[in-house]
Length: 316
Image (cartoon, rainbow, N blue to C red; front, side, top):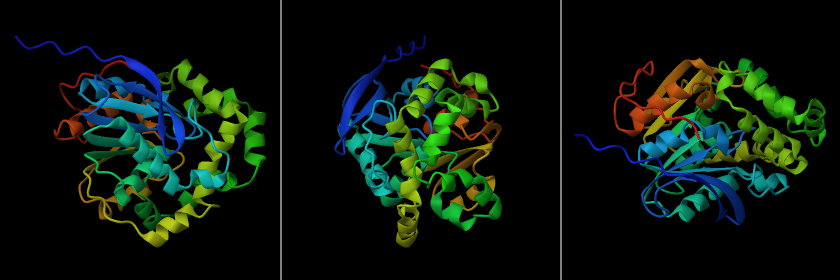
């Protein structure tokens, strides 16, 4: 008789000091030190709850799961200067969270802005990583290599966000709830995003200081010179085994920006999900979880996500 699986550990909310700030972190773990950590980094305009479909699945695989609100979001501290969101600082946040976890090994998983941070963290080798998982943001070197006029047109909002105060004013005029609903309505499967997630996003957007913090990520990257500094440093080869999942129906990023990724990552597994939008882990959670589980178990990652025998837990 096979042993029954252990019950999932409870999901808890805690505060963690890292890099001089206090971060709100949702955890799902059986122990508080050692073990394998899965650190989940969300994107714009989301929060920790964008990982609600993945947290129980990763815990079932035996990971200690941490899903923080990035600086400026949710219950994490929210500095107000553009320089506070420089990439050099954001990767130190990740290093501080890893150190605070006391984990023996780390799998870093990022989407959107979380993926930009994760790419940079892996390139600069701030801490050893067991695996890297990237969702719907291209490697910065590959994106530069395959940048096009079509991508420039899709990046209009990043250019608009460089303006002081006006983006905040227009977003507030539209309404925080409408902005959050717009994120959900841009998905192929909006029903996968529950009301609580929408409310948390709306609360972030509706808070003037937090909205400015969220936009400062873009300002630090472009106006603050973050992208130029990275280009001057170059793009060191990533040695960490990497899974990249890409929702093809991404309205912000062209699929062509992924085509040169293999030049920058030694051990790359890349899968395209035609069924999903930019918010891939929420839009196609069953497929994402199947591919993710197969990869983390060391099994072949199906081209079409037909991983057999993978139990998909319900979200938190």
